[in-house]
Amino acid sequence: MYDEFRELKTLNITEAKILLGNAHYDKGCSCGSGTSLAPQKLKALSRYLPPVDASHHNIENAKIYNYCDVKLTKDSDDFYLELEKKAKEMLAYDKFMLFFGGDHSISIPLEKAFYEKYHNLGKTPVIIHLDAHMDILDEYMNSKMSHACPNRRAIDHGYKTTDIHMIGIRSYEKEELSFWQNHPELDVITADMFRKLGYEKIVESIKKAHDDKTVYYLSFDIDIIDPAFAPGTGTPESFGLTPLEVRSLLDALFSSLDIRAMDLVEISPSLDINDITSWLGLKLLYEIIYYKFERNQN
Ligand SMILES: [Mn+2]
Image 1 (cartoon, rainbow, N blue to C red):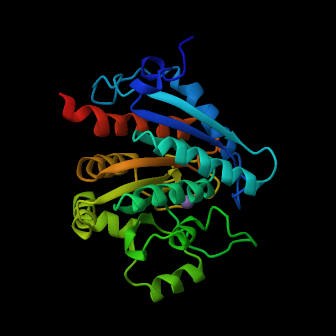
Image 2 (image 1 turned 30 degrees about the horizontal axis):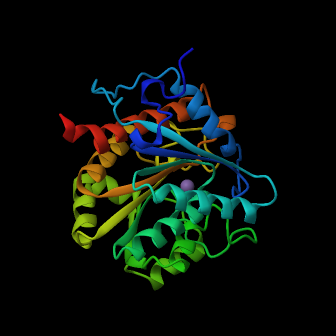
């Protein structure tokens, strides 16, 4: 049996390009749960996946170091604090920070740590939110830390409404629609708009909206993809993007923008079929690794 991440893996943090954190957590979920099982599932599947992308590029030089596994021990407040602390430590290395969720609430402390680090350095931290959902509710089911709230908490933590770009949206709570109406400057690219505009125009307009002091945090909810391709998620939404559309989007995002950190959230192995959702998440991650680290090396 191969090791996790096979030749991509390193035990030497100095040679790592990617620091991996694992957020084993699903208490922020509302509907279907099981996302706490995703980090171990993704890592288990990585044993079968050679470090080669779909266009047969070898990506093994982009070494991954498994930095932390954060679990729920005491209570949720304590879990989020621990996650924020780990993210701060990881960001201090100035390497690419990658987190496996977990439900989408894990992005709240991660995006907070990202904001604080780069805002203090005089940079503009910007969020790219790939999702079927806006996740901009102030509160959901009596919780301000629900997986329906990360973009609202991001605003509380300092991000400007013009510094959040949502792509793939196709499901709305009424309160989210009125928030959008009151903040027309929010960049909300619905799944329908995505199909009309195409990924190139979308990424171009994000790039144009910001200067070269901007750094990006990518929050990747697997449910941006249609549930026909990614059924293993708690809140499946019809009329989603295809895996190929998302792959092209990721390609354009990583070639145009300075993305310094990302999370991959809302994969639920217990709701999945033959692990296809986890496989898709992992395959897209290997594509990302090529775009981010290997493309310009050749
Ligand atoms: Mn979602």
